Image (tube, rainbow, N blue to C red; front, side, top):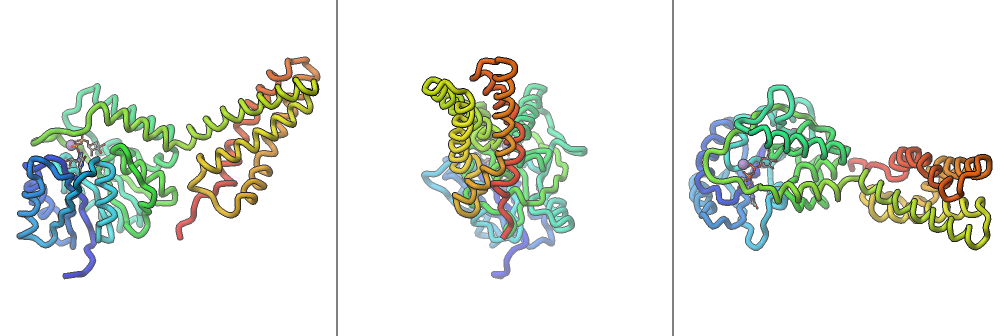
Length: 356
Ligand code: GDD
Ligand code: MN
């Protein structure tokens, strides 16, 4: 009996009293023959959802309940549930039957057959879709998906990074540091596990029959904020903007003190390399640091040398030969150096953590 289940179904619930029994029954039917457990994560729902689950648990040892008091939110409920899951695989699904339990066996099968670490049930691939959504809702969902894919490269491995239905192989996917403030647990997991192999399978998101949705416009705003704070390109752009300011500021100061633009370019470039390093190391690539800081600083200098030289020579040529105003020449140089800088430093200094 204490044998480890093959699959844990993690179901976050908030006011789903009318849905848990139908879900339980359809799960039992769909997963016939699979050694599984169902773990409900309920945030002390006022409608008595937990009582219905306790009732189910009396008659079926596979049913488990985690009640969280004083802690609320879909994202953290999912992560807490995944942490407590005992199965080799864990799948997250909604309680309201918008995620058809009948998809679960094909998700498990996909994981076992392809060796995927994460299987995403996707609405945005051939065979997938949404039922009864207005054009506006479809557009918002599509837009949010596009923004996520644009700003967070780690999520481009799936066609539906906003899916609430996904499976992970527990020993291959780390939940460490995952802190989804919004509701986007999958996005956070993909971001934290750049090495994980991801496979999509299609499904149709159904209409909600009973109860109410808890995710409104506020959730969308929260989600956008989450995407922005997690986005490496956004962070990199912020660091770049600060570095540009530092570079120009230091150059202006040296121009003022010495009246020599070559000295101003060299000083501005070096100080901004140092400040960019500190910001990238502490922030943009904090989770990808390896080795000692002075080794990274040295490596960073080697990596940005081509960009630094590009800035210097572009600025020098413009200022000297074309008599462009020094600080403008420097700015054009910085633009020229930026692309080189991004490609090289993100690839080489902060290596993707290897699976241990
Ligand atoms: N424990 C807990 N705490 N559960 C919650 C909370 C909470 O604060 N908020 C919502 N839930 C549970 C609901 O009871 C339901 O089982 C599930 O999370 C999804 O909530 P819904 O309110 O039904 O969300 P939705 O249908 O608008 O959105 C769903 O579909 C989207 C599109 O695939 C979610 O799965 C989203 O994650 C998904 O993006
Ligand atoms: Mn729903």
